[in-house]
Image (cartoon, rainbow, N blue to C red):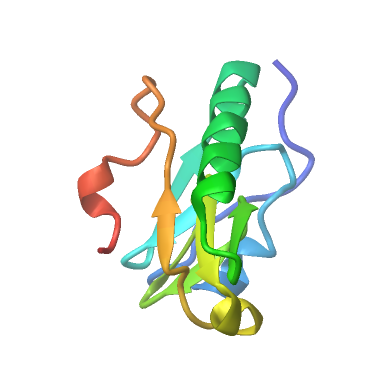
Length: 122
């Protein structure tokens, strides 16, 4: 198995959003929760197809001034998450980088590396 061409060391403190910029672009999803790094492998086609179906259903049911978006990183206290689907009131859209969505959907995966839904902020 080929070894990475970079030297990787975790920070000697809690992870911060800036640390994500130093991670390799491998296709993995990197998220921070309470200063801890969580890594998930790339989602497969079934996951994306289901997320697309949910997004379309939510989009058709959403009020006219709401936006339904896929996989936008959101900041939370001491973390950064990438839910599969975010629902955002139009007036909040420009603030999405600094405030969370008005609602979010995460398509659960069977492998153990995905986050337990109980750790997601509410």
